[in-house]
Length: 159
Length: 146
Image (cartoon, rainbow over all chains, first blue to last red; front, top):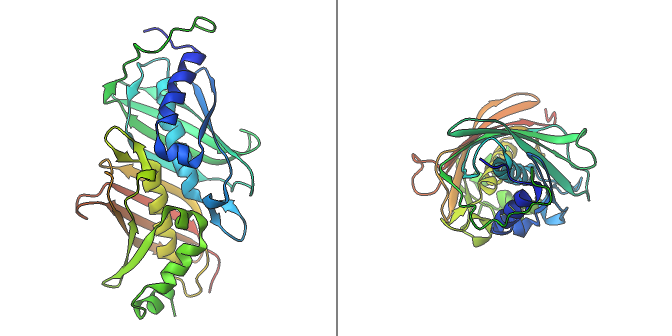
């Protein structure tokens, strides 16, 4: 199986992300692809606050961002064909809170792919990945292959 | 007297509504709460803006999770002697069925309410309560309200 280049993965993930109404509503964007690691960005919005006195984001907003980032990281995995993958389960540890007014990033990668199950982990953070505000793990189920025939080959950074 | 005792006497569940309006993201999602036989029924009204998979269409799994977490937090608040916002420690969510574009319901059970930490289980469903779309467990840190 040919490994997708970073720019091919970026195109694929961007199309998926931009087709998800709730992702666009929250302003979730593709930040970058680095090999098998996907990073998405959630811009701060006062509508997404959970604690009105502190101005910090609702824990559920991080669940949305992490579910989406871990779920879409499945197509960035180099050891398995990109697949339609509904979430089986997701666990989020809230290590800290996002400081008010700051955008949140989430990075995720598949750490084990079996024939049917993809095991994924990721983090949410504001300033630095070394200082995460949440950690997530979850599993995704491969239910069908994704048709990639439309994906324009890009030799610029092909592996 | 716990908030839940107050709201039991309030036919319009006004106290729950006040809390839901206090939390911007809960208001953004349009979460509703009703009292049903002494328990709280949470409702996430059908809305196209929650779609995560347009081809089915199915609701975004993350939104179902966020709804369940908010339901758990308010369920906990309603059982406090002095209601205060709890802090989420962790959240563990099992998806059982895709959620379709329709109203989603949730109910919670306070499995353990400790002095600082509470354990809540949440069930979310659309058609029948015995065919849940998702089940979840949340731990919250509660302020020392004694």
